[in-house]
Amino acid sequence: MNISIVVPVYNSSSIIENLTNDILSTTKEISDVNKIQLILVNDCSTDESWKKISKLSSEYKEIVIGINLMRNYGQHNAIMAGLKLADGDYTILIDDDYQHPPKEIPKILSKIREGYDVCYTNYKNNAYSKFKIFGSWINKKISNILIDKPKSIYLSSYKCITKKVLKEIIKYDGPFVYIDGLIFDITKNVTSIDIEHLERKTGKSNYNLFKLISLWLRVLTNFSIVPLRIATLIGFFMTFVSFIIVIVIVILKIKNPAITAGWASLSTLIVFFSGVQLILIGLVGEYIGRSYIKLNKKPQFVVREYTNFKESDEK
Image 1: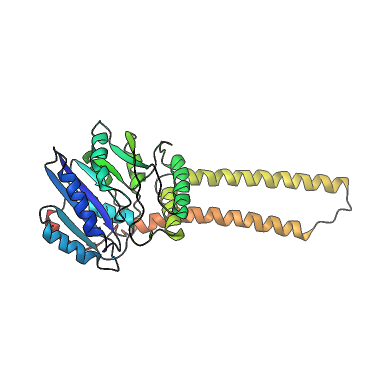
Image 2 (image 1 turned 135 degrees about the vertical axis):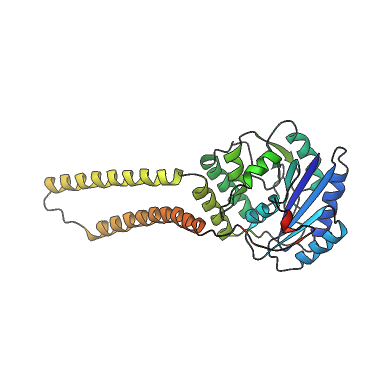
């Protein structure tokens, strides 16, 4: 069995060496593993992460591949850069912050080899901040509806996929990558296991409100037209409500001609319906804008340099 491990790296120079050593020591203890491939993707870190990755590549020439991206493309795009070089029978995705314990890798591999296409991880003790937990909860609710995700599956970034799933994922050439959306477009043969979730060893999460909203928009507009259908239903509903309001006003006026129309209620209705229209136009614009950007062939990522890999060898 050959395994690949992809780690998106951003400002993790203080821990990436220890994480690499722990991953390799754990995977080398798995008896039937013939080849280990560790792909470290530097997502344009502002610290010395690339320097550390280069050093690790020199120490583990047959194992570690480094990818240095030209700018910060985001976690999912960085993962895609790594997946395109992965050639293992199974590929494990793991974060760089040490909250995903490498010791769980044998357990994850054992579960997926029961015949599943993907194995996610559920955190027995979620060590994320309250803000990120809340963001994950919203993402879960959106994903349950839009990408037809089983409710029992937590969309952890610590997961394992088979080679067949990987080959389908890397066919996606759009600039707005969302790995979990691609997974559930490909397969529903998914499982999960419970693991321990560790406290972050250093630094703080790079996810903020803007990045979470960006992630939600990827889910909303990349993998479903449900939002457009909802927009249509809202349009019909508002039209119906407006029709009822007109009838009520006419009846009241007939019953009591002395009623004076109020500017306040009229202004409120205008502002309300204008707001709804702007929201729906913005939603349609999000779809059109993403299509326009893809049509102009915006890249998923651009690689500045590799270690232990030649572009001519790319799949």
